[in-house]
Length: 146
Image 1 (cartoon, rainbow, N blue to C red):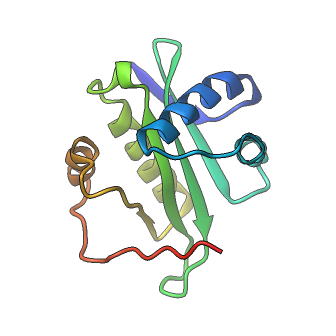
Image 2: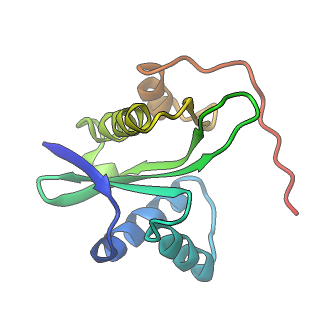
């Protein structure tokens, strides 16, 4: 059985392990100081970052990182699901689905207007999961690094 909950300080080592796996998957490098800054912000309940942990049989199996923000298109906050990762050895067991459903339930309970996210077009496994919740729209993402 998978339970999803807020990240806590004792989760730090497991979160770092999964975070490293997430960055490896996307062939990215996040500097150690940025990783630690991200973790500290996830642990601060006063910030609009939402860190959720999935546990399966007492083992940390995955996480989501989301950003809650105001929108000019709605009257209630929107949630950007920025990162979702499941331990490769535990994929296919419903952990990813539980993580997304958790955000949906949280959003409904807190009155959010929507949850949105993106992934690579070639991330077929994730897209099969995401398509269970909603179909992709026709927007194209642009990213300008400053």
